[in-house]
Image (cartoon, rainbow, N blue to C red; front, side, top):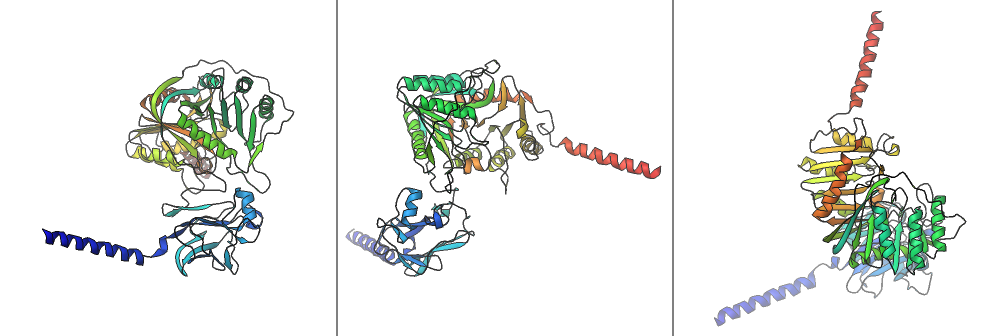
Length: 560
């Protein structure tokens, strides 16, 4: 027994000794890594270009080269940001780097530089060296795409898992169990839910919105200010077509009422952090979060019951509210934010559209899981959900566009689910601007239907009582997962825009929106081959008939 114990102790000692030897002789390549860099910044002369090293231990034996010059770091250790010009870096990033290459400010120590070190915008490389031996290398445009303001990040062993620009946020996904969620749809009942949330707020209201022209919602917010509720609004400063006179009048009115209003927009050489602020959400009293597909317009949030088809939800949960508040505060802290300048435009006249029958009422559910989606940070969750679909997908989308160099990946995921047996229905808007070009909704629908799968159908909604157009950006998966969002199915919306959405995991929520979807699905659809559930396009038959007619005419003329 003693012999066995002694033998075991000796074996453990040998293992421990071997472990120590391996630790002492192991390659140090993983001790430090280039985790981020920007070669083409916004400052003059790309003075804000930078790279970041992360790791542990002394940096005295480490260096970085671009093939011409070499940067070393002295006795520093730990995470180190090295910028070309510390002062210009500060102007863009609002923080100083740890080291600078050009002596620009006494606030930043100089790195040790031999020869000329400056990253080229279009084609160059970075190599990390340990005692002169290369342990990591990255080049562009071979390994990563070049681009002005493009930040390259190394995560999970790969570069650029998402497109990242200077100043953009990097929120992680979180899931919350909400005590109560009120489901609603436009045009039926969105106005009553949103106005109720505004009326009940007595502390704060924050709003992030692409467009705002609704007089009735503006008046509700002005009333909130009068009773002491602090209202803060962040708007897109350059929407497509520019900010309208009516919107300026609404924002002027709210500014005079005491609301704090800001816009996000490009100025001079500094492009905005996001192509568009396309969000549609509000947070009241750090407790209630309303996320929807519609802008604050009479068509999006109508009083009459006649307007756009869209989905929304009001979530009562402090965790969800905190999450969206942090997103709001991050957006508000950017270099591209400007205080609203009061103008002369007046509040427009409150117009009332034709009354329509309100088919759907709000529905409140309890204890369901809610996951915020923030674009571009976590919009990949939409693709994940589609890829995990098993039995059914119902998609209701204003439009779907293919990417410039590939098919739309989310549409491809839905089609693949159908090919694997899931029931998939896709409904798209039929307004002229979504059907009058050669590659828009009717062509997308035709391509889907030509696949000839009975369990895969696409329709174009052109008319339904009270519905002016389909503006929704949502889906229902497997009768239990619902997406409510502002995210369009194109390249820029999930990749370059600031967007917001919710994934709600609830059979009750899925049933509610499925009822709405079915109502729209059975409505009037575009009466052309693009929306017909067939495996061919009648335009080919018509073209063939024309050609056959020309052939017959040619033969007849030859004979006569």
